[in-house]
Length: 303
Image 1 (spheres, one colour):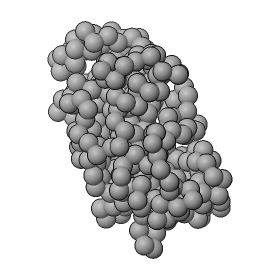
Image 2 (cartoon, helix red, strand yellow):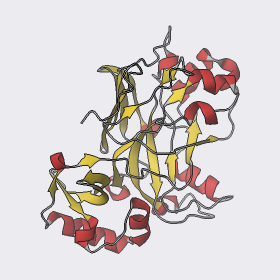
Image 3 (tube, one colour):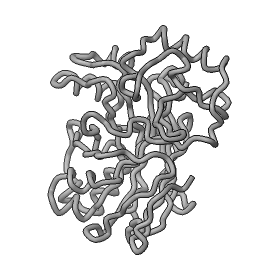
């Protein structure tokens, strides 16, 4: 089942996408009073989720072309938890670009926090902050959405805490990321977290998910890998983090990016004004965003 946050008329709502992808059924028509995605997740049990999926198919919804899709969780309650250097080939290209910042042995996963004032949805345009950024980069990532509070979770039980998966583009300012010797500022600027287009529930996949993952810039294939090639998998990460912190319902964990980011090319292929970034994970969907043109300070969406 695909669950999304969307804008229809003057309001933002949560809905379920019908299996054929043509209509969105608002959750309030399914007997759920939740006002946002996190409230919706808190209201679910596995039994209710199965019943909900059946009910969606029996109802009429809003045509998908009549809604504007927002990020599934536009305002995360806490910063997003991210993994750095979590594919071997990306570790190699990152070290070539800046060995001091990205090189070295990594016996444990690298965790960092990504600040998100508001996550961008599919079609929204990205502020490149070119007044302070000279090396704007993209990173397609599998993002895990936690469906219930997780504390002291074993690896064997970890997937029972996953509600589903979505796509995250971990936009990065490489000059800020390397200059400050840590990644919070360089990855936390406004507009640097496109997410979407929706969350696909975990029952649609094997555990762990082994999904082809790709990114394109202006139609050129840049990244191509599979989530099975992550160094540290979903279960290990959830279990390890939950030993020392509570992963609250709605927590988003971005699982790192494969090789092919802009800094990995010689010379680097950093993003420019007007560039279109397309992130794909098979079984989830496609997330498309364009870098704004600063001379016009343009707003709006691609679709």
